[in-house]
Image 1 (tube, rainbow, N blue to C red):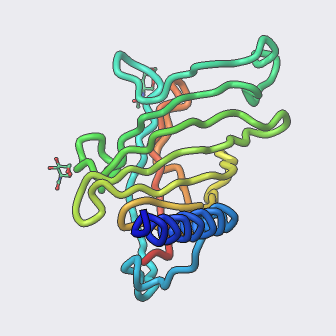
Image 2: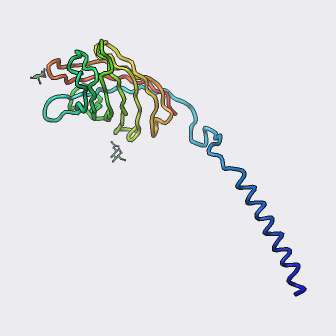
Image 3: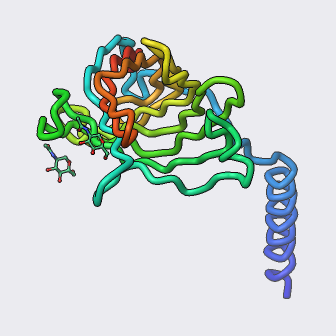
Length: 194
Ligand SMILES: *[C@@H]1O[C@H](CO)[C@@H](O)[C@H](O)[C@H]1NC(C)=O
Ligand SMILES: *[C@@H]1O[C@H](CO)[C@@H](O)[C@H](O)[C@H]1NC(C)=O
């Protein structure tokens, strides 16, 4: 009995300390953010890359790569197809011929967002499948006034080797069949990335 008292006291003290400590931890909420050094993510020097390829927008025939998925009842009243939404999975090739080597796909949506001229809202991911950028993507988001000779659209981000990418794309129609709407567009993309 004489032995039990001090150990009980010690136990109570430890218990008290434990609760004090745990309540202290609970009061101090864990943070959801922290600063990190760029090198801890393997980021060293920012570089500038130029990518050049051809974008094949095939809307006709048995194997279209661009399909209209939605439009408004009023879309037909607009010569600019205002309200039409097209989902694309367009091949990107090194040369302008359809048989040219595939380097990636442009996957996303373009939609007619202009009532008075042909101005498309472009939202697409350029997914590359060749060379060192195989598996990396660039995200493009911008306005495409398709009848202008050169259209410029921002590159707003990327993944893989294109993490932190920012830059711009310039699109120039290389060939268009005005009857079917099929088109081949030359792209020059300039991006900063690590
Ligand atoms: C690209 O990456 C995929 C998936 O890792 C792989 O299957 C394919 O062979 C690669 N292509 C080239 C050309 O390296
Ligand atoms: C343009 O498209 C029309 C309709 O699909 C087709 O008949 C014609 O052969 C095409 N022209 C060229 C040069 O490919």
